Amino acid sequence: MFAGSLAAIANFGPISTPELFPTEAHVLAYLVDAHVAWSIALGEARRFRRLDVAALRRVPFPLDRRTSTLEELAGEVASRAPCEPRLALFLNPGWKGGPPLPSAALEGHSLDWQLAVHAALCGRTPGFWQVDRERRVLKVSAFTDWLWGLPTDQPARARKLLELVPPPARLLEAAQEACGPSLQRCTVISAGIDEARLFEASPRR
Image (cartoon, rainbow, N blue to C red; front, side, top):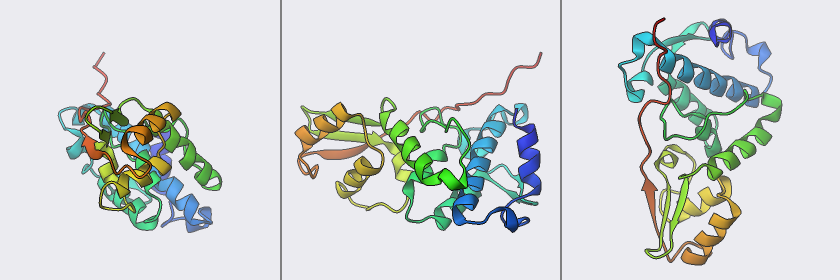
């Protein structure tokens, strides 16, 4: 399904054809879209069916008349947008328990809007946020450990995440009721994610 797109982005990009990327938002959209497309393509490739996701992140592929990997793309996005951690939510390399992939390609002219929409989708995903009122524990997906540009200490990090990746209204109310407005009454922990592969190679016919 992605063959045509992968062939195209192998031969153009911000380095080889900078005139096609008038703003940094257009560059970021290109990099994220490439990461999404290659995450699916590598996950569905028969020759890589025995690799786990961590190994798939290091498989080289052609991009912008050079060679890159999912790991390198994620690093480039982070270095280009150090103050925009929501971009990491698009960079699930293929973990079943990671954030959902976007339903449409990112576009430079609508990047801000797409960031907000996708962050809201991730926050509503079952298991991304969890509140244990009795134990006063707030759990957040361990994938958020990958988000850059956030406070390193809890609960400050969780407070920022609640702003950027909001849970459903009822869950947010429950968290604030149990933990306090600053989350000072709760322990914040990372909830592990299912690291099994989201994509599997199709069987031969």
